[in-house]
Image (cartoon, rainbow, N blue to C red; front, side):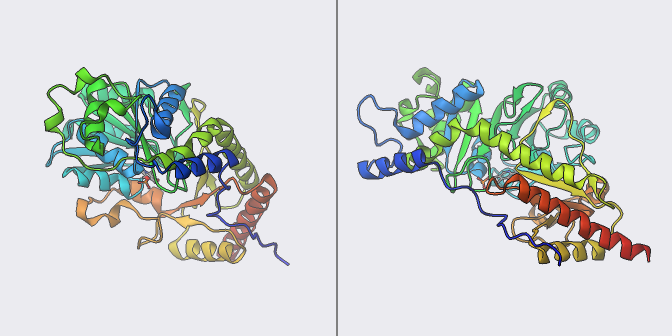
Length: 399
Ligand SMILES: *Cc1c(COP(=O)(O)O)cnc(C)c1O
């Protein structure tokens, strides 16, 4: 009998008891709106912003309604205007080009290298075409940030980082999201902290942050942002920024604060699971693992591998054979978008060009979530199933 895995790939851990208690306290108070404060009180939202800024060594932090909203506000606060072009990864998730479109700009997709990061040669080639880069650390893969920042500095490109999968990760000892003008994070259920929906922006730039705070819907209450810049920074810009109403509330912030305290431990636990699956997959027939650079301290909340030179039918067969044994994989090479998974060629509003190198990578790219509800034994079993089924497909191909 083939072993079958029975865990759920979408089941996160329950929230810590402290988060539940703090949430109940906020609900008992009735004061859920972030500006509904008593004199001298920072409130959970302000406290979360202060704590995240301190943990990441940033001057300023703003909590918003989603990771997508964090990117939209950041692009506009950075000065992107309607009609502008914004460079971005071709391999990313739909809300990234969506944020570019939301500010009336148009993405220029940059090719993907075989390690799943933005192709720096293609970026250098296209650098003259835009003044902004929305860099997505998609699925937690961090490119050579030193080289990327050098390319962008030389070309006068402002960098905004999408850290939805790199909250708590580092490049050469620097927290992910701290190299560009701003880092954008998501606290949506499937990311590294879970408030259902939510987002955070970090920056050291006072004017940028003042613009983002005004846009988030601060009205004239921007002095109730303990992790925001001083009141003088707002002079002359209050009437310039539209109110786009995407604040975070105290309830979500209360849920997030205790999770922030254990972020490092959670990240280490994810990476332990990733390393477990990776070790089990070594030598699996037809499976190429992604080499992780020394300088990258990644968070292994998901794992990707390449089925190089497999035809689409073999990949489909593989996915269904694994699924039949309880292992749920996503495929970025599918011709049609499915569930959360889509590819750049599906984002028709952005007039995507054909990117041959990205197409070659995506054609064999398979992706799997690793929720913390899995233990190391689960990870070993998952790897055994993935390896065995790969063997069956490659054996059949040889006969
Ligand atoms: C989830 C995600 C986002 C956006 O986060 P939301 O909070 O869902 O809006 C952005 N980028 C990537 C790569 C993501 O996976």
